[in-house]
Image (cartoon, rainbow, N blue to C red; front, side, top):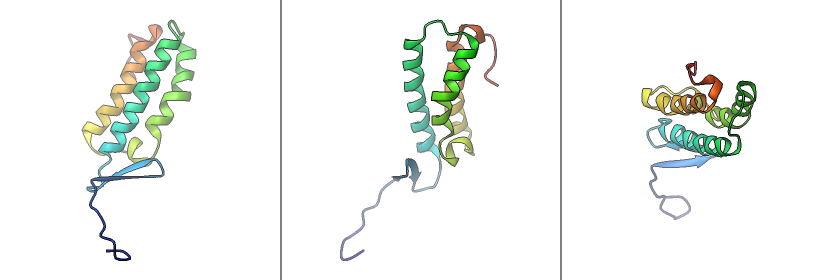
Length: 106
């Protein structure tokens, strides 16, 4: 209780744009970052049909990577499933550029 009000239990909270779960795992933050990145990636693919390698990499760094790297849990996740969620966005971005299709995202 605080000031006579009973506090409610919640599974996660959002503070300064970072999702924090009750078990302190970054899963929710990683999923939200991947979802937002996939949305922006879809918008980019609709806007640029045949981007060259240099343009696509600059667009990726400018619009996608910032969502993936926002907050420590996103770029320093310790669970394998969280890493895979973020890596799938990177793999999709590589497949969308015609000059990078045969390369790995690493």
